[in-house]
Length: 156
Ligand SMILES: [Zn+2]
Image (cartoon, rainbow, N blue to C red; front, side):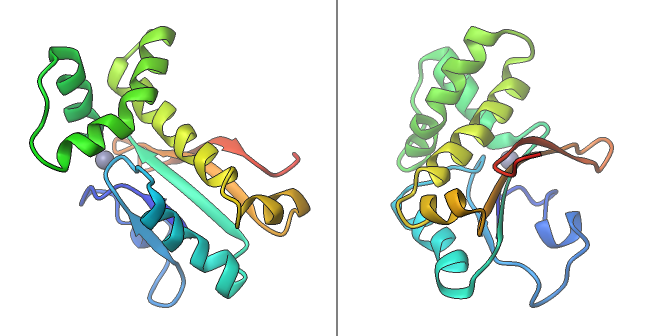
């Protein structure tokens, strides 16, 4: 199960060299998670014994960039775009406190926030505790094509 961004440059099947029938994929901006998205993520582990969830953020994320600019300039984006901005706001606040490249740090913080949300999910949490399900936070570099691990529920 890959939970990744809507960005056309980051298709999970191509990033992970997988084909039809290999992956469940849920794509939302950044990625962000709400109840509907969580339900789709639960489907794999609960209904199909999927053993791994990868939450994949990526370099130069447009959704994160738009959220950072919206929050930074204090102007709201229209309609449901503002829902995305508000969903990214906690990661933005973390990134601001941390310093460094604000957009890149927000991407990484948002990925870890999504991991935390899914890890606390009532349908997923017991499976993670037993090791039947793993959750990995990862970052895709557009420049290098490499995926690096940001966090892992596996005991390494
Ligand atoms: Zn993106």
